[in-house]
Image 1 (tube, each protein chain N blue to C red):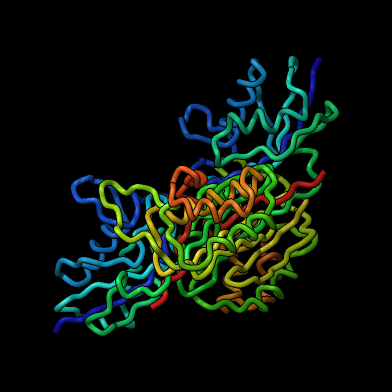
Image 2: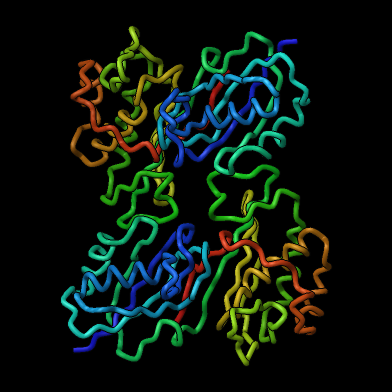
Length: 250
Length: 250
């Protein structure tokens, strides 16, 4: 009997070349490691679908995957410990549940939330170096907060999209439900919730908001950048290791 | 003119074989990396003294070192950026100051504070795996708090000392100014401040308090363990990666 399982996972992306399997490259990816472990548990070749195809170095607090399997023997309640017994310690299974056969982790996602973390202090931290982007100069956080407001809503986000190799989406309109900037101690968090994200969109929006924080851009200029649909007007792509997929909603 | 500099540093100990130089072993240590960078800056061979000789995998939020140098050209206010420009990103210089020539980072330390961090949750965290000890089962934190009180004060801590290779101190009496256990979210912190620590003393005390938390030992048994001066009665040595040197006082 065909079954469909949904599993939520957390991972430290430092040692991986992103989520997605890269056939024939020999590069280690999250998908590959999970498929190997699940295939080992099931005895058949498992292919998983991930909600967000995170880039190399990007982390996840709550990534969602699903897979269908025809001859599964492990009860849903035992999947998490069984999987964690096989996974390396930088990938952790959090929950597992059987779903209706039509559940699709990627196409079924109604909203995804990413957080980009900046470590804003004159000196770097050896402990946060892999999980945040170090910015030593003081930032105007109030200006970032103001600028982020202009990003919220339904827009053509073509200015905030990098070229993926070859493939470019026809439709670059997305709905950004939430674009918030908050500060806590040495950390500044850029929080984005949307129905979907274009390639490198979060890192480009974060990089652009950082330009506002550095007073190189006025908050209102975000409107012009959005309207221009011109990638060259947006700020730089900030490094992957500051980014984390924190939530997927269905 | 001979000068003496005090430098405070933070480091992620994950990739090092401890603080202390291990001549001829080819193993990378914190001391070796710092000496190489300081020697490069000064043009003469620098030998440093560290306040705490942390073991392999142990971290530091505020380690203190000092070194004497006869022909130093960098003003004290420029040492931190100069050093951080050379250091790998898992070691960070925090402060630098010139001291009286007799200042000695190790012998001059009046108190050191170590914190042992336990990640107490049914599932491990990929992000805290290198900086905390994962204990999935629920712990009786109130019992740990009670037991820690019995450790405070001046005692012979021979029960809480592992054998260092060959060298054993004649005097195993130490004064533990503070032994506290606190809980915050998924973390339990074992905090120890003392005039000095025996080899692996913090990890043995933490391991013993964890036995109390697991109800394998009653809190009052700490008194018997202390009085026995018998290492075999104490709990196991918990792993190095949960330990961090957080403060050195002079």
